[in-house]
Length: 164
Image 1 (cartoon, rainbow, N blue to C red):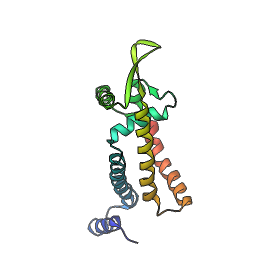
Image 2 (image 1 turned 45 degrees about the vertical axis):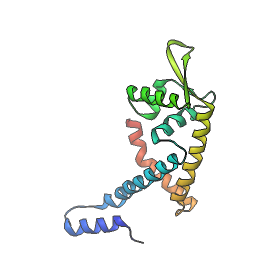
Image 3 (image 1 turned 180 degrees about the horizontal axis):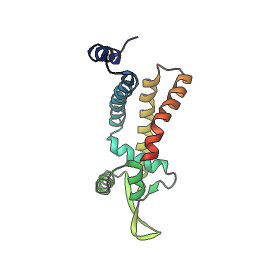
Image 4 (image 1 turned 90 degrees about the vertical axis):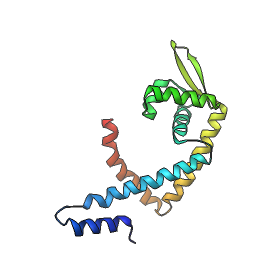
C-alpha cells in the first residue's frame, strides 16, 4: 500500500540523492496524521456545539474530579495559553452557562472556575463523540499495534513534555 509520503520521499530521493530523507518516512506521516486528527476533532466538537478551546477548558475542569473546579492559574498550566486568553475564555464559557466563577475560600483575592452541570454534560458528550471519531481513525490497526504505536510515540513525545 502506497501513500502520499511514499511519493514525496521518492521525489526527494530522485532530486536530492545526496540527502538522507529517511526522517520524512516517519515524521511526514505524523504531520499528515495530525492534520487528519485535527479535522476529526473539530468535527467531533462541532457536533456538540463546541470549539476546540472550549473542549480543552471544559475537559480540564472535568478531569479535576468533583467538584470540577480549578483556579485560572491551574487552567493556564493545563491548556498552555496566556492569562489574558484564559480570562477571555472563562468569560465566554460563563456567558454560555458552562462554567461559573466562585470566590476561592483559601485566597480572598482569588477565584475558582467551576464546571456547571450543563458544562459537565457537554464535556462528557463531546468526549464520547471524540473517542468515536478517534476509534475510526485507529480502526486500521489491531489492538496490539495500537499499543505498540502508543509506546513508540510516547518515546518521541516524552522529552518534549519534560522540556516544557
